[in-house]
Image (cartoon, rainbow, N blue to C red; front, side):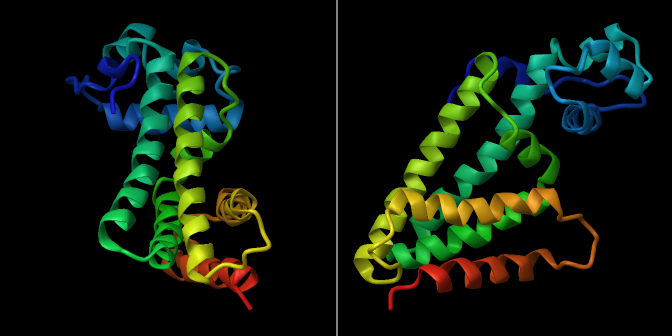
Length: 203
């Protein structure tokens, strides 16, 4: 899938001391702490201990950093649905796989997913990310509707509402989950699977 400004994602040589991935990780951390709009290039340079010109050696703009971070999260989430669709004929199995996979993506890419969930559509990069998020939601909603027809999920809950409830629980994890903490990410996926589908299970 092509995205506006995708040339910003092309690999480049980094200056000694930092590579692109390190710059990206620090920038996303600052965006999450201060807010993207409130963060200036000067803020990023100061945090990294780089001059502005050195920062621009890695990324040509602040929005290029944002685009790469959001694409990192969205690519991984879309891949979860793609894999589930390719592997499981039954929608019920696809939905279980998507829930597990989405939790895995969230825990493995916590900073970039956190940033994605805070996007409000300010500017072209954020608007494009929201379009992809809506498309992702629509794909999952269609699978939920199929799972209803198979009898896994109760039919008296609107499929779009059920999808929002499921991902409301998954997305809330960004507020409290900490990598390396006491919560095992694989078990977390199973816990969310049990709580969401048990509550929505057809009786």
